[in-house]
Image (cartoon, rainbow, N blue to C red; front, side, top):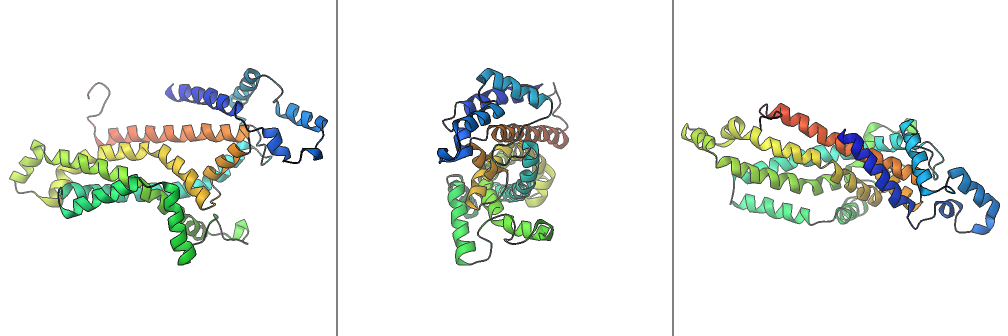
Length: 315
């Protein structure tokens, strides 16, 4: 029920925002030179797309098509919206998966190091590093990495998702991974700060509890104390925060894909917005809402697995 109500609200709000956008999809489709297309042809395009009907009628028609499993046809690509999303998401999921895993592992590790060595030089260095990352724009970091590792050193390609001049059947997984490395690193570096700081604060809080003091009284210390008494407690906020970061990850992918000209879902939504491609834009918005919702559901499920005490009515 939460998912259904969320999608309905997203549909209505997104349609209203797109409908009153100053970008004219017909003019964008035709181009700047309107003399090549006569008034009758323009009217035919408007009628074919259903833009001559009222906003309410357009919303109802679009909602009916959604219920029938039809996301419509893209104005720009002249192809099914569902097919475009499926194709571009396969490229984006590789990018986001690498960034999500790296940021989670690195953030959790740095948070544990900082919490176990509170007040030390290492802890101050980790906090400073995270504060700098938290205030660093993702697109600026992407441009910086692009200049250093692609332009100056030449270690990685300047952009795109596959090598230039190769057909799809000749592109290997390593080629895709090679092209996705820099944008993935950009996303993962930016996402490290939140996980690190939250894990550090939770670990410091856990280390002040009575059961930790009891463990120290029994002679436990260091990694043994962390493994037996602290790891599960600090895992809960890390899991919740990291899975809830699906929205930030998706938004960051939009900027990273623009900087590196990576042909993923993020770059597609920018093109759809600038081109007034209403069906494609709304389809991606619905898909991204579903993507974020699934991340939150997975976080709740893992919460119950990590801590069996979390049951309805128990906590």
